[in-house]
Length: 342
Image (cartoon, rainbow, N blue to C red; front, side):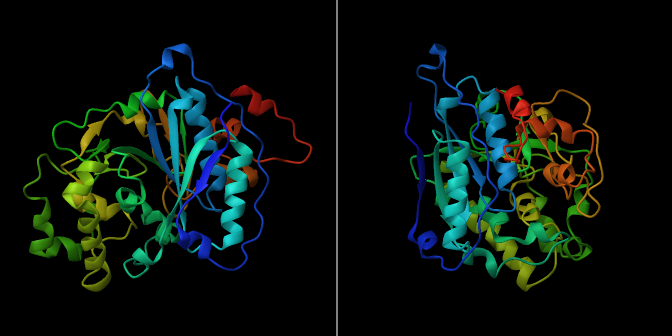
């Protein structure tokens, strides 16, 4: 049995001061082991953010990945926590992670929130304005150079297929990023009239390899070597600075910079790997149905989160699919649902 491998990196995290309070208690997840066929299986690197607001969703997401993986012990998780979190809160996050997954090979990386504080402008939903929402832009700097590929996952999703299938995505000779594309979406609506009226801004899409399409940044396979050599972090920061200092060119947090840099250059992945929008829109968070077609990943993007709707006693029908993966410890509750995913 492997020893606990949760390690907290970076002095900046340790230097954060103040309180933070305790988090809810979480149950220990079942242990998932590799079979004989996993000998020599490649290590799959998965990055997720880690904070108090979305902790419950993150733990459910991890459980779903392990539950459906053919080689669960070949998965290494990289959790990104904010340097702005107080020391006590960071310690509580580590304890919750260790309680739920005591043998999980995982590293907690510290994201310096100061990198983006001066670049973030208000959006349609406050959650989209949090510095940690922008940490995905800096994965190439946060993760070790030895990690050449990473799968980024949001904290409001469930994997219901073997993650190795998504990990094996062929990015071709030059793509730095792979994700499901949604070319039926109105691409122009992701940017303001001020953007489209500016000839230099609008021209950014003119010479793309393919027609630019919307893609959701909650599920991305990223070639970190190509990202680093292409200087993509700086390119994303450029558009954030334009938005903050020159003109309001978009409304949706960290998504539009990704579209500005990558739309038309993304390696398309089957839609099954991101059945997104289950949290409704960014205002009301109303119930949604699944898109037609097969499903490998359920994503509650939007305002409505399944754990909040379940706690409020007003769940949407699809929230019942999330409930069995909820590791929150409730006093007097039985573990029947948890046993169902073991």
